Image 1 (cartoon, rainbow, N blue to C red):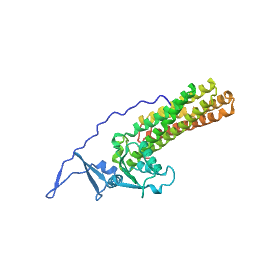
Image 2: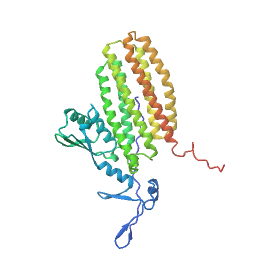
Image 3: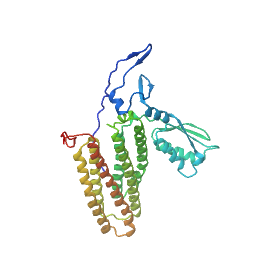
Image 4: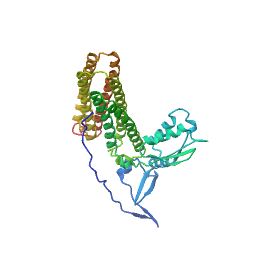
Amino acid sequence: MVGVYSRERANEAVPMESRKIQKVGAATLTISLPKEWARRRNLKKGDQVFLLEEGEALKVLPGPAAEERQRSAQEYVVDADLCDLDGMLERVIVGNYVLGKERIVVRSAQRLRSGHQDEVRRAVRRLMGMGIIEEGPARVVLHCSIDPSNYPIEALLKRLYNLGATMLSESCEALAKGNAALAEDAMKREDDADTMYWLILRLILLAQLDEGLVEKLGMRSRLEIAGNRAIARDLEVVADHCYEIAAAVKEIIGQDLPIPASVLKALQSLADVIGQAYAKALGALFSRDLKQANEALHLCEDLGRREQDLIRAVIRGIRDPQGTLPFGRIYSGFAQVGGYARSIALIAFNRYLEKPTNLSRPSTSSS
């Protein structure tokens, strides 16, 4: 998965539209709302909007966006005493974070158990922007300080992809050099992938409720929300499979088996094609390049043959039946990783077709 696409979106100035202040009655000042802005938010006469003062700016929030902002700012209480299974409290905290909660209070009727305190700290370490702002024997207050405008979704997806790509390349290098420490390094990156995925999911769910965040997050329209959520999930699962590949590599190195050059060659060949497929699929997604998406799909079709080449090389070259078992996990993981490249390429196709082009546009005939 080495050889990442390179396309950075330029910093575009936000267009400003002027409005004249009108006076209504003795003291009321009014301005009109832009028609297109109101249409996108399905606002009509009689609907309620909310005004929010932020420094020199005055924000206009439609009802649902204002409700979501109020909900996020509300304090949520988590009863640790009801989390009586290992890991349950940590998952509850992560779930609240993903749903956009800003302030979470974890409390116990008596005293937080040592295990619960460990889960709180583990959750905080794995959630970007989350910190402990108050702590006592029976109560811990967590606060998330994420500003969505500082985290464009495209950059986060690239980061999540690069984590998986690095894990895969480090696993191949670890096997070739017999370096177990390098395989362990690859496995450690899986926690970083989870952190990135939860951040992306938090931002996407917030954008579903507040259309004002769509542009701030670098998305061109709400149509991109569902696709980006699917891509983030795919890339997170890819990191999970890369973790399993790295773990299998570490096991093989621990067995101190001689690895034939034919096996290493077949493995690297498969990894290279997967890397090319991802580079083209993601490049097509962000640049809306249909030819790149098509090339990615053709590369995915070639993965099956290369997977079979790897299986045959392992069968011929690894004589110890015990040694072939972790190799089975490796090429199974490769097959899964390659499948998600195809999924992303198909989303890139759909994204290209979201708007009319010379290739696909509404008919102008009267038939």
